[in-house]
Image (spheres, rainbow, N blue to C red):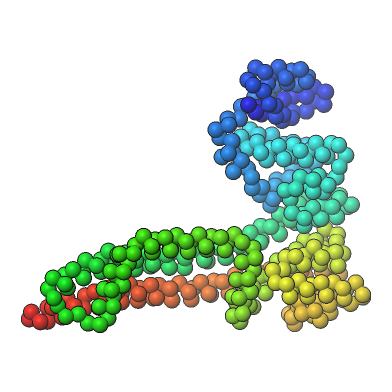
Amino acid sequence: MRFTLRVFDSASGAVRIQWLEAASELEAQELARSRGLQILSLQAQRSSLGWLRWKRTARLDVADWCQQLARLLRAGMSLPEALEAQALRLAESGDSGLAQLYEKLRLSLLEGRRLSAALRNAGSFPEMLIAAIQASERSGRVASALEEYARHESAMRDLRRKIVNASIYPTLVIGFGSFVALFLLGYVVPRFAKVFTDTRAQVSLPTRFILRIGNAVQHHGLLIATGIAALVALLVWMAGNAQVRTALARWVERIGPIRRWVRDLQLARISQSMAMLLANGFTVPEAMRLAGPQAMRPDLREAMRQATSMIETGETTSGAWRRAGVAQAFATRVLQAGERTGDLAACFDSLAQTYRIQVETQLERASRLAEPILLLLVASLIGTIVVMMYLPIVDLATAAG
């Protein structure tokens, strides 16, 4: 069994977290005392909840980690002390997976490694954060680098959340409309068909068409349900496959408005990354090499590579971005202003905010336009089915009259 111990180390005078494998709680206490540790608290990790705990701690919120660590550093703690405080807080809340990660980082720092090297060895942190911290270690601005990355990640996360939220409503409308249409065709329409068969009433061609569809849905319900399940599984697989997503994005980007929207989205990510990296002491070519992979399209990544080569040969940033096709007239003017004032980081941050506002505005307009259109389409489909079912009843009432 695995035990989490909060212990006092008399040699260093510090409170630490220890993890021990022991057959019982008594054996864990004896092992801790044999190592000269004074136990403050002891908690057993139940194996029945191990999988659930792993699922909960497998995902590290890097932005939240950066904000908390920067806050502790601003309060006067050293890096090992701040990491130890984070590990203690997580261990007390039962989140031992992340507590172990923080303890591993703390031990790496005590062994003499820099924070950037410890993060790289941990394997759970993005390369851009590691590079920013590595650059800030030269000037002692680690807390500022952590805050810059937290702001960068929060801005990108807000943008992703708005994109996801905008897609939820159309998905619900289409799914609910399809369910109602299948219910009418598979359950209601076949029962109306029996009424028409019993009365031997003459039905119109559209009604005969809808009745045949209803009978087909009723007799092949299992096949249709299997097809729907296969379609849902295919969509889930496509959403999880990076190559499929890339191919689909390339096909969708052929539409003019969507192409401009995707380009603004990529430029917002690149500009935000450039602002963060330049603020932490990177040169423009170094920042561009790290920010280039933020582009989703291969042609934009190639344009970033070309612009980097131009800058290394003496071209200005604004000129290289304009000649490579990365920046248009507005962005070129903003970068030229940054070159005059010597504050390119602020100019890239301004560009990122501008592109982000454009993306959000375009997304809001598209969602406002798509919602009524989808509602009209779904209502028209259901209304057509209902009208086709009731037309023969109107004919019967007319004949009876």
